[in-house]
Amino acid sequence: MEKVKVGDTIEKVRSNRSWYFFIAGVVVIFMTVITLSYYSTKDKINEVVRYNAVEVTSVYVQTLTENIKAEKLMIEKIAESLADYSLNGNDKNLAKSALSQLSNTGDFSLVAYADLEGNVISIESGEEINIADNEAFISAKNGRTTVSQYVDNQSPGMNSLLFCTPVKTAIGIKGVAIGCIYSEDIAVILNYASLGDNDLMLIDENMNIYGVSANSSRNPQKNKFDFYLSRYEYEDGGSRDSIIADIKDEGKGAYTYTFGGKELLLAYAPVGINDLYLIKTEKKEDAYEPYKSVRVGIERLYMLFVIVFFVMLACTLILVKHVIKTREKNSKYNMIDNEKKSMTYTYNPTSRAVELSGAVEQTFGPSIASLGTVNIVTLIDMLHQDDQDLVKDITKRAMAGDSKFMTEIRIKDLSGDYCWYKLTGIFVRNSKGNVDKVLGNIQNSNEEIAKEQILRNKAESDLLTGLLNKVTMEDSVDKIIRERPYGIYYFYIVDLDNFKAVNDNLGHSTGDNVLTDVSGKLSRVFSEFDYIGRIGGDEFAVLLVIPENMSNNASNLVEVKAKAICDAIRNTYTDGLVRIEVSASVGISMYKRDGYSYQELYKHADQALYMSKKNGKNQYNFYDKNIDYEKVKYKGERHE
Image (tube, rainbow, N blue to C red):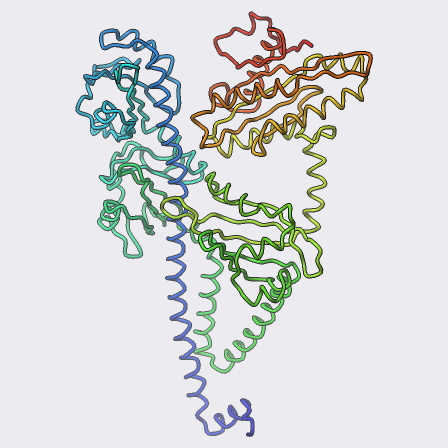
């Protein structure tokens, strides 16, 4: 069969003078397709942006919920402390004295006590209050810890969250402990939830505002969110009534609107506690920034075809050149991806399926590339055996509430050698906070990571013991406190008793052996999630990270670890002639109670350590703020 050449066809069309209609028809078809694609893509981008805004808000909701749970635990601790006092409704001075000892606990703006008749006692002066009819009080009186909202219609900006829990004794419930968080302190919690990067607001289904984050542009004196909703100019079919109805139905969503000359994006999601809702607002241009290049590209392409309509043949040639250049550019990009062995992935934790794209064949081989989607077990088998706990590590980070992760892995290439890759990912969570999928990138970084690891090991480790050095230990403690301020941590300083005698009588070589021996014992006492460092000649530091499922048993666990340190380190060293017993004196401080940074925790643990030395060594002591360490002549010095 004879081939029909395109050039001959165009020549025939031109010769019968109908080529004008042919080119015009082609241009009209292209313009129609491009116009429809432009608006379809624009709608898709809007949908993706709104979806992402809701997902990010849901992540902030998860963090906010954890903070509220922490406050519930705190008010229960306060109730336990109040139970130790012999409170009764007639002795207000005793009640105020007890409350004054607890007034700085947690993030509460006010801590109070109510007797069983609902009479409230607090350390603040003012008129007497009775909350006998309050639902939270009634619930706490019946033995349940309850969070409720208090709406102050008389004082703008003074709505608050109310935490109530029973004060239980051996003979029953004798009162209710009350923790109140005012709007200004709710703002602090909102800042924690978003790390201070977003404009957040906490409301209920009746549009009452309970707090706004520090960088919010809204007036904190306005108590009603519908004050703002009624003033917004909505896009995308949004309206004041539809948003309010959606919130009352416990829905979640996002809308763009204009207010005060600014284009903004509003997203909302239920908190899951009572009828509370979290509102997130950001500039529309910031939300659409990742898709700016796509929108600009489509607009330019659309304008190109408008020009084609008027210039016909010339623009047709330009279009052909544009297509050729685009193919060449895509070809170059594909060559670059293959050279760098860069891939993107989507992982479904439920089905354990991994969808791969990019340089899959160059990395995993043609058999996996032909599948497109594979089971995670297939990929795990291609990792170095030291990296095959990858799924467990990612699962732990997801359960810890992390929003993203970055790690380094080794993948066996087609030649059988292992190459270093950087694996990054973000957790996409549903409304319940569970991870629906993990999205990320796998980038070949063999040379870079190999160099980084050599430098990092040298820079971060103590050369003798292999533990963290002093600088890295301090940075690591401050980092975990900064990233997970809601955690429970205990800080130990371990100082060896009689170590100088070892060096003086048995030699520095034996002294070095003692230090490496102690470092190994500390590593066995503590877990891989704790931080252990050598911060001085014979001085070690440990940060104990209490797991969430053991938070109620933290005080017992910290003492078990302290005793284990003393028992493990106590040992006699000899050269056959001289025998020297080495033991450990330990000082312990607690995060939040004794300090919020490495320096504060170190200072107070050091003071507790001094008491261990002073009281006979080979023991542990907790920092006690009631001890005047100046009077016991503590000046930061140590004694063998």
